[in-house]
View 1 (tube, rainbow, N blue to C red):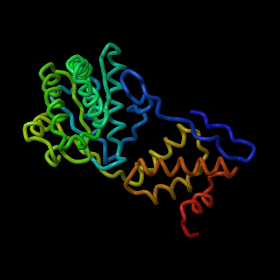
View 2: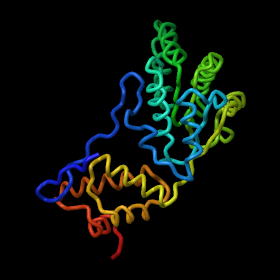
View 3: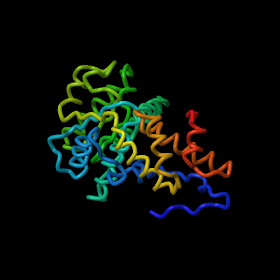
View 4: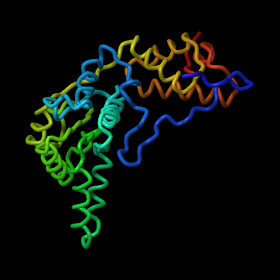
Length: 267
């Protein structure tokens, strides 16, 4: 990808959105396997995710991906959906967060006079997909009615040999407020973890992000950012975006000195 042109002050243009959501699948079209940087912390999870996306990972159903915030769970879920559609555009794929699943279920129950039809519509929406990707499932904990609905949805899809991929911040066995039968089902396929990436992987991720956005940032400045944010990739990318915005608004370049100053690093 070509680097974005500099303006008269030598700074990059303001950042542009990088998360185009498909209105039907709710997938982020730019979160693909090509833009997922592999490293020792995530290589096995990526390999399994790719097998599921290709349709060859029948023994991996359901796939549960867990790990801390900002380590790439959401990216992998979207990559699975996007690649599955590349392989077979006729597939019905749906990405949803647990919050969206909950809200849609509650909405279906709102009007007693219409709830029967709306529940049936809700069931069709989720039980007639070929690939279901649910993010942040830990937030369903303790929501008994929603968990029961998800339990039936899971069983319906599983019995029809449809692909189910779940992301959580903890391993299924550690989910709070979940019934044991549901936990057992979540563990019946394969469970993979995402760990904190190495310095080299964080550097590669930030370089790719800078290239995709057209940010003109020197290697020394990237190294400074990577050293400051050792665990959370989402926070690391956010820091890069913040620097780009400040550089644009103040007419500065993202030099190492500029980066040190904005990060509060003593010279």
